[in-house]
Image 1 (tube, one colour):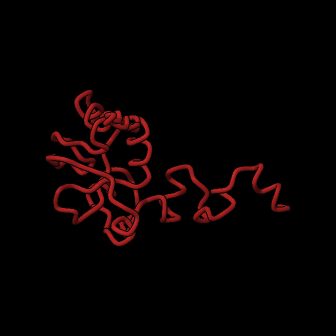
Image 2 (spheres, one colour):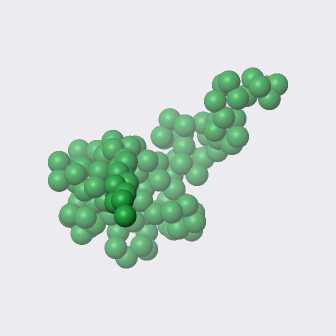
Length: 134
């Protein structure tokens, strides 16, 4: 019987985790609200967690000032229904509301994204749009 090698997992980068978190925000262990983390509050330990676990498993300061034991990026349906933390919104100058900032037109402007909510044209690359006759 020949032993097959274990598959090698290709883990994401810390920078990708942070980049996605800027527009989707994070949840703590309670999963009650979406929270933001300022870029300057990430440490080397956090970055190591991100690359190994695709989550931060050590205490991290949230934009609202609270310290969470851990944070992760929730799935799409969890993000859509979750309220954004009022303190994080206030600290970053975002309007209060529900869902990821990238799905709120007022937040999209603050993120430097088109205010129309994107749509198919934003998802498709220029080559794909030209193939469809746009």
